[in-house]
Length: 286
Image (cartoon, rainbow, N blue to C red; front, side, top):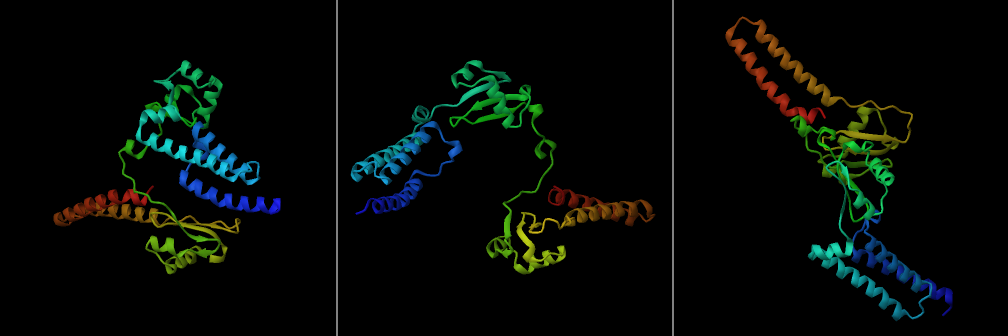
């Protein structure tokens, strides 16, 4: 067999075997790999490449070496899942860099990180002031996670004691001018609803590049023609404003009427409507 044909067949076979090996080894984020995982994947890739270009002429020896690295990798992953001690030996342990607002210089030296590099890593986390940091830790992947001091954390709806509506993943219902029926069905919607929304916006389906529907049923579209300015939907805001106006009108009626029964009725209805507004506020205003 000619060399070029041999290499072609080897490469094609190893290409599909590599897909199988990657699936067996499991999903890994390349940017989040530990040093051990990085070396392991690199050696497996190198052995595969050497077999492919016939640098390892004996196929049996090549596959034995490849099998050893894959089997040992799977075995070590299994042992790491079963034993925290074994996991720490193979992948290392996290290192505390900042504790209670103080930089741990000895730990910085241990991970070979300079003060300037620490500040640079903090800036990648949108932390520009060292005084704002309560705790920082370097993970086994080399990534640094930061906990801000209590008075420096962003305020959340929980901190304000306000309820917010639960959100789910937006569904893409239009892509490249084509309607995707499955995402629409997942939302309990259909093409008739979608066409009506586009008609209200004054748009043609052919001009829509991407269309997404969020968990509250709002349709967002991006057009092929970027010069067209789309009006922002204000349906929820208008509904909320109308409810508030109705409540204000009921309070006004209760103040203006001389009839005690009517005054009590208007006042009670205003209180009921206020409760409805408060329960709908997380869904109408976000």
